[in-house]
Length: 462
Image (cartoon, rainbow, N blue to C red; front, top):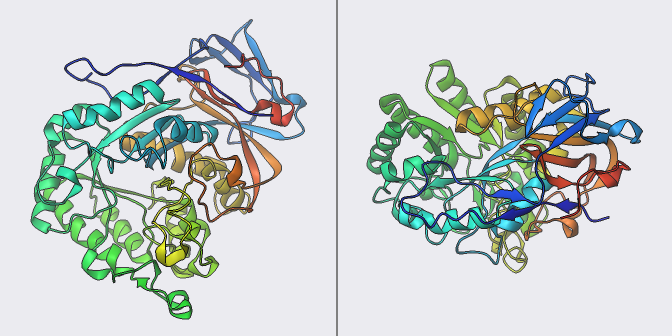
């Protein structure tokens, strides 16, 4: 049975000036109304009814649409909805890879109600005028809330600062993701400018002079054995090290994207001990895979690359002890031809919105690496707090931003069923013991797959 996706309505941003808020799409076809939910467990294992009135959780309802999980053959968890602070939605400019509509449909299917969209677009959002096409696309097509990043430098070229002050009211943070700030002078200027906005600066840490031409995998035993050009760990951690010195001088809220090396983890841990305003993220593929798991296929190629077993162990320790704040996907879809040229010839980037939560549930929580409350903290609580996103919770008075996850299922990752245009995932065919069956955003169904576990949906088909 095909899951039901809610439609969106037009939310035009063509007025002048731009609205003084983060822009997001708004869904129609269903008022939030009153919903009673029974038979679901929370992340601590407790069972209590959930009631939604006009998009918010309340203590009691005497009437309303009913979702009853008690008859399902699977245990169902009700969790605060995750937020992904690092996605590439590709629109405007690269719609052949992904669109706002397909990317946010994939996000909703993965349980997300909020995503932060990176600025490597055409045009690059380096001014309010160049941001407008992205806001228009979000307003007309998004199925969930999309919070755009602003670029740090004009055209993400790393030379001249973007209109950081002008962009600040309309973006969630600043990044030149995909490129590190190579010039230290430009970096210092940028950090100081972003500090004045109070927004986070999300850094792609890569020293380009340390990356050999044609680098495609981690530099180590795997690259040597396969005669592939390796990317050294120092290309990441050396920039983290440099940037932390600038953070100490400027006080900018500094967020490290897609941490992949053990050295970066230790540098960030030390910076936090020193009280610096530093946060960071890693991705499921860095927590689950090591370079020895790779095959010579484009679906295993991402930047930074999957590193060695020691790096993976350090990342797992960092995510467990709180050094690493967030799990983000770095969802980066490409066309089949761009990903069909092996490790050496394919574009960098994989998809992850539809697999992140089920993979983490299966390979981190089920294996006892950390608990459901810890997973909620790293995928929902901390990302929302760091980036100022709408809160999610299960307490009365909270907005009804929740995901319902069936556990104990026997699924497999099937890229052919993805709602994203991207299909490249290193986890194709991997087993999954968890399945997203319902995503609510302000009480509205952004994704409805209740029928897959034998639960009647009260929501009309769109």
